[in-house]
Image (tube, rainbow, N blue to C red; front, top):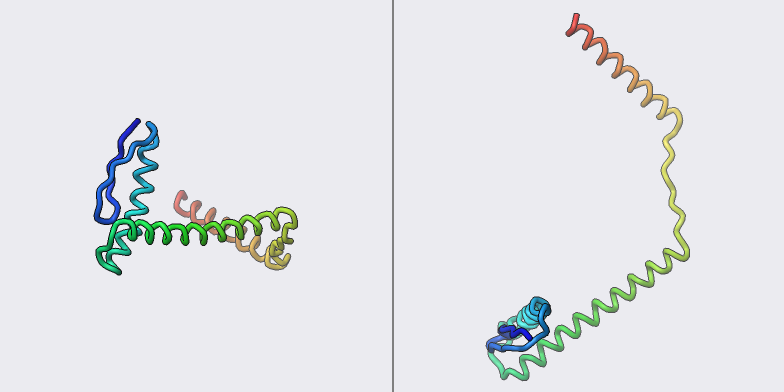
Length: 120
């Protein structure tokens, strides 16, 4: 079992974790510490239990919001998969196609003449 040391707000902690899960615990602690530091900046120093409660509630609120957004996106993806929207591809008018082909042919002709003049 590995020991991970981290700081939340103004207090240091050490917690045991399964081998290989150290980075995950460290990242979670960093996120909780970020919330705690915001609270301390706004409200000042406070008792540890209250700080942890407020930081946990802020994270839970953010999680609930992200969960709702993910569910909405999933419903939209499911709806699009079951009923794909018609996709229209713009059609190039035939006279424009012909004009572009004519321009391309002229450009090639000019390039060949220029090459012939440089070589000859």
